[in-house]
Image (cartoon, rainbow, N blue to C red):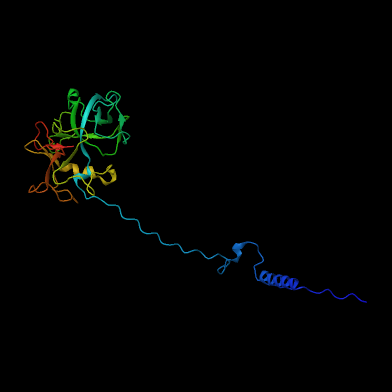
Length: 274
């Protein structure tokens, strides 16, 4: 008797159907094994570029109006002063300006432990050396530091001198110079400001004046001394100036300290202050 054909089980039929379905699905896939090939391509074979979302515009920096409040005027305490070794016209002073430890352009004074700045001033031969010792002055604290004959100067001492006559050199070595003196009760680091142009958010002072904007060169010509020997600022004739000044003073304000009291000179009236 001949052998009968093997019977196909229900399980075998199910396996065959799954196999056929897999083959059919595989035939529709791309021949490459790279999954990126399954991404549709634009004409020329390049992948479509993802659309970049536009970045939100950066907020415009707040620019304080041109005014003397941009200048960081403070009380400084000269601890000591010596002649510059390489410049006949310069002093080198160690000045406490109320800076915090670690502030730029400062160091700790070994003798006093105070945080100080080194400041060069062209006052040698104009102000006696003994008058530059252990005294309070007014300093411009946010000018860009400058190297002066090998020593970096990190501020400027404010002083007054008579207006030069026409054709006269206002840097002449025989001119009279007086230091601007803050009130006696003032302390090192105390802010000084011109009445009508107080410091504050959106007003000043700037951390460091940008030399390219010539803020100091624009504002300084308005500095003067009054008949009362007070230091003041007059905005007359200065382009782009913010209106200000003491009430009823027509754009003029005197230099005061936050603790009260005016900054003065000894005897020069109608002088230039720089």
